[in-house]
Length: 199
Image 1 (cartoon, rainbow, N blue to C red):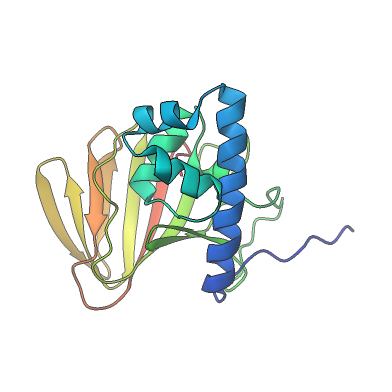
Image 2: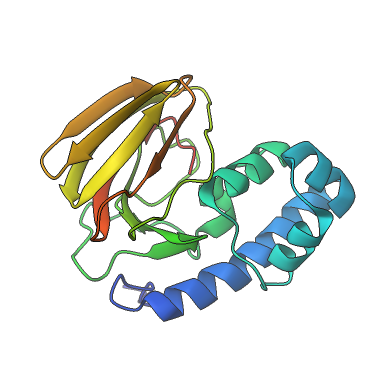
């Protein structure tokens, strides 16, 4: 049996941030070149500055989830493709402390499912420190369901705002503009599942 390198775990956030940032920059540049776009073109289509695209490509900045989503859509890809470090394991078990973690802005995603070509389901634990937010609203094709594991969260769905606490759940169409903010005093953790894979 071939042994694989151990993925970055949730217990090593600094390592996760460094590896995910440098890997994201490399894959973003590759995707941009494959798409035949300049940094200026990607910036214009993603509604951000060219300097931000440059910093991300050079591993000097980590964009917010909303910004990363817009960049991924511009490049006809998704966040999973840009951030997954290694080929998904075929095993069905994701042990505590051994799940990969990526960071986008101030928010971390702990991977429950590993992205794979043709996969329909995606699940992450969103780790959201106090006062951190998703940086605006996004919308796309699909459906989403979630369960607040720890802390509290303000979920924004269009013009509606819902305050959720540990034990609360939610469901909505991904076509509804959505985002969130941790309005509590402790880090929030949310099991978040969506289909098709977007992040």
